Image (tube, rainbow, N blue to C red):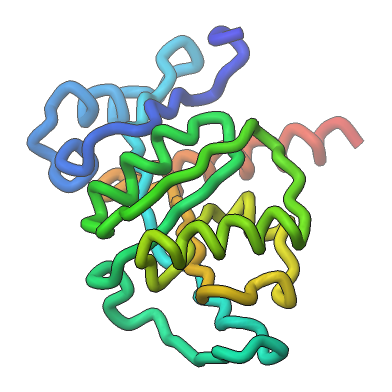
Length: 186
């Protein structure tokens, strides 16, 4: 399978590896990959970011509006149904969240209004001020189900750091060569 690859991405690298070019090991592989038998190797960090904060449903007694400002200083209760729940939990702890509770479900878990109610009630009993989940889980949760606490959604973006330009240039060259091959074949 590797012989069919145009490039290699090493994911979940520490941020310091993508933050500077002092890592000669990767720099040599990224810049020297000019031939078909040498594929570039790009280190990639997973960088968390806040996607949105869904306020408590306006149908609830405690409807509130909340922006994304400084939610990490507030106690939270997190839940997720992804393949690596422990990685999401670790991300929240690394981000500095005051994690009062955690609930992990199986990958591709289907939520219901009752399940979200139970999670929210459990979070309130523990003293949480926010629920936190992943982007992947968010798409399975209706806004109207958020009745106890606001829901903060955390996503992950691929961060190439100082290798961003080299990655983009490599992709552009591959696309241009694919276009040339396609136009010759017609």
